[in-house]
Image (cartoon, rainbow, N blue to C red; front, top):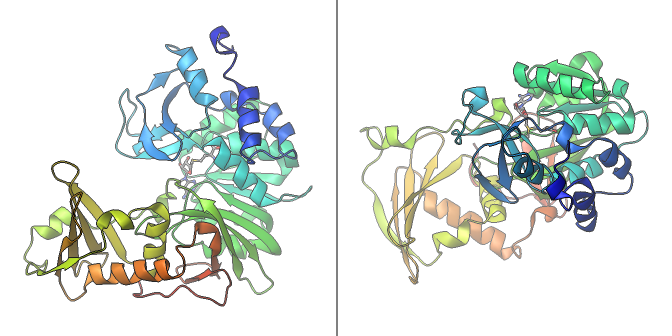
Length: 394
Ligand SMILES: C[S@@+](CC[C@H](N)C(=O)[O-])C[C@H]1O[C@@H](n2cnc3c(N)ncnc32)[C@H](O)[C@@H]1O
């Protein structure tokens, strides 16, 4: 039932907003209108904010129907599961593990998928089932397969899809493996991010097929890639814009715990001290992190906070050989750096930053990706022949 006091907040107002933003195109409007988001969002939700990795406290539809409705018809992501289902609220858990993605992102990715009638589509990450339902409305149930790693979420999505008169094949499994039984596909759309494109996806696709997937390096930064698969099994294309999806379970970063290493003698303790004029604050934007992460694939970072907005940016390598830190405090022109171990991680970061700066600080849509699948890939700038330098192999 639609709450009476929120007539201004609802599917029509959100449709106008998404259309104005250029995300909801006329060819997806019928699916949007026929498949309301509220039929796919569960009763207990943790509303998110656009562009921010923050969630509000749990909202129960049964207790606060107006708040729930407002969240569903706001252009923002909604967390629907934490910690792979281990946490049920009412507060927030540690890590969001399923969500109803931000509507702008949903329709931008569907638009990038460029579906045509009769296309066979594989979706990775069923979640609530909303995206699968939109695809079914556009292409027909028989052309949509969706894979969800979490059996409980898959069962709930299946029931919601059934209640809305859709019956795509909902598979419980590891979407990193694709789903060979229904291949070859014309389109693959992933709604969880990857660190590399699984070779199974490419192997299960026709030449000319399109993959739309969020992709991001270990260091941070992430964007949606739109790749076309060629006759030789190479997928290549540009990034279409920034994103911040949860990682595919098998692609989670699982970074070494730095606390553990800092406490042992194995970790190099003698640090060389120096100064830098590059502020740690200038290397923290999502796109800048992406450019650094592509060039130094095994670099990761952590921040520890001090007083009055000061902080220490820590750098580590996933092989756990070296560390560096850079101290930020406002109003400074120079920042103290410490580097320990065989690698000079701050210098590697600076080299990557200055390369990006010298290219004119390109945005995500100037970058592209070429891959045969698996850990080997090439990231390029403007043209596939202009490769982004990799300063250190992962
Ligand atoms: C952002 S949510 C998907 C949103 C969904 N498309 C919707 O319309 O609600 C990401 C989903 O990917 C699932 N997931 C994570 N790793 C997976 C994997 N290896 N295979 C399949 N699904 C996975 C998560 O359980 C989660 O439900």
